Image 1: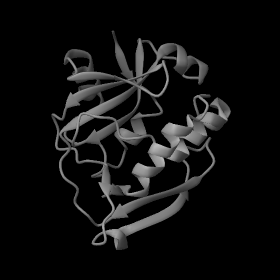
Image 2: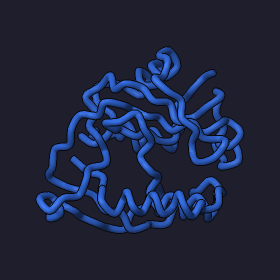
Image 3: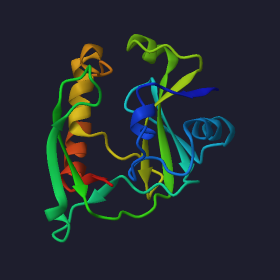
Image 4: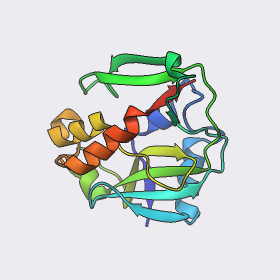
Length: 185
């Protein structure tokens, strides 16, 4: 099995201007080499048959991305309308500014199959392409954000995958994200 980093994921995980809330201490090439050479701790099923999650112990200083919202940090929450790229419509997002989350114990790359990526207009020369990565304390999936589920249900023309919303998974996502937010450094 071969893995590459997609053009979609590269600027989010390895931006031109490094940010503290992205993957640290390795280049995109080193990241992909590690994914191709190191055996994952676990392989989890993703939200659809074309999606897999490879759980790797964190070999970097990358910090957890999702942080619990508490009375002490609620004042640090910010929000705005943003798009992930120029082709997508902006959606409401929220994040923390000004806090220091713990170092993640696991990096969990989100992989899409070559066939699915082709349906979404991305051709790769590998079996799987990285479309994102979770940075977590536990070797478990962070629920997909509700807005991502909605975007996926809208289809590939709107930056999604075309997978309909699973109402129970959506409710679990809302429960999680009601009490958590990502952070920005």
